[in-house]
Image (cartoon, one colour):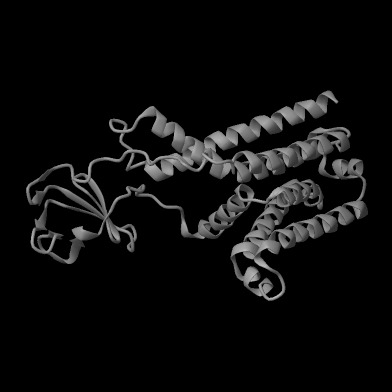
Length: 313
């Protein structure tokens, strides 16, 4: 029991650290350029941090649960009790999180104050920075065109045409920035690699579902699925390969759930199920995958022989 409590405390600590770290990264991602400490109050930062923690809560718990599964298999002499205790804990946290974070008020974070418009502006498909704007002359001018890679160009000056309300660069007829299309927001001048966008979309979809209502059944189904990932975690004698299998299992589950609610599978299911029944469908899919994993686990050799094969005993 002492070992089970030690593993449980590690899991809770890992979850808290991930929520804080990933939440901080979200805030930095959004405001690494637009955030201005001279104009933002401590309350603004706190609200933004709460909003970011709310967004990363579900995926942080999923990652922590996956790590806890490995730790339980590798470290626990008798993993049944620790694993059941961990599974119950992360399922309860998912359920409570879906209730807490979906409560009114947590999604009302105010925008962090940004730098003045004469320094950084968002103009249609470009972002523009100039440290000095006097009258109709900006000098120097840094232009980041979003549809180009890397897209950053530095010019000695830019001129504002008061008639067309456009910013032009002398000698560059291809750069004419319409100042009537200035965006009021100031997003960061960084973006995630394109190859990560599908994963980020699926994480965002899971987050929307966990924070929506009703989500209790889906949260429980996800908790049971994470418990069943014990099977791919010891499916072969190569622990690193097993880690890849767990990642692929979780990745596949995220895609399935997101596709059922917001993607191609949802369009197909629309002919046989109402939109309010998709939660039951996604929970049923997770439950079926969990059942397959659990049945497979019964067919695997005993854990003690597996540990001898991987050199843990």
